[in-house]
Length: 124
Length: 167
Picture 1 (cartoon, helix red, strand yellow):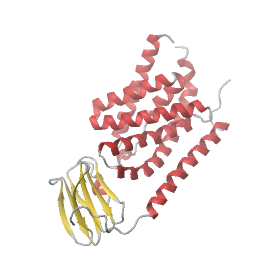
Picture 2 (spheres, rainbow over the protein chains, first blue to last red):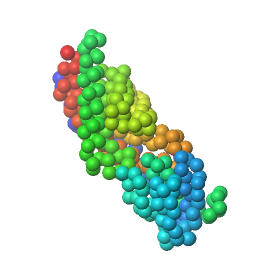
Picture 3 (cartoon, each protein chain N blue to C red):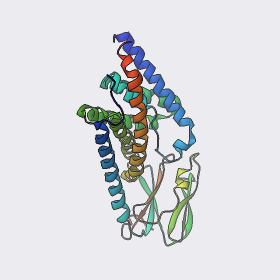
Picture 4 (spheres, helix red, strand yellow):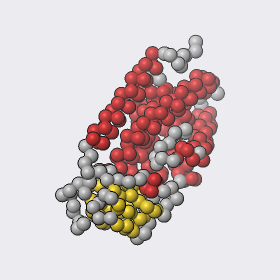
């Protein structure tokens, strides 16, 4: 007796399981996205330690972590213009401007995250 | 299966898993997005889970991660992968034990939990909980990859799984 692989009743259970997981993931994603507000400044962390905060209303170009990444702020949006790592993931991440959005460079352990007004800890 | 045969079978599955993860690392499309992996080597883990049981799956997965990181990766990659493998194995063994789901369901949960484990480990290592926002795209990619891996594993288990008991 060969066990059927396709079309048995476990397949229905699988589909329910997959659908449930996807629905949970999508609802979390939507809730997080809809709760984002216009950001006021970005905080730069290296190795989990806050090193700088830059206002999003002031255009500028900043060298991060001793030059491993270059952060640009332009028209209220922040992006990484250049990175010394081979994969360039943080550069491809594009522009961020809303609270909670972030750019992460795993190689250099640099994180740039947008915060709203009033969350400042360091001097901007 | 006696001990020698078991050892040989395990070694064979581990080598298959290592070759699969090496092949995957060579295909650029699979690594374009950070953390998104098809997890081809999970085929060997799922196969081991159904033919050799939970201890076999644990051995194949953990030794594969250890050897692959040692040969092609670095220490951070080993920590992330081990966390992913531990979480994936726990959930796959539990999901299989319920008896409700097929290889596809088991492998989808494995794929998602592997990604989740890696993200959680990264969040701890970088002391930055915000990396968790990567979780959603990884859940979706883990699901798609899990379905593919599950279907391949199901076919393999059906075609050659039975012979594993006779060798």
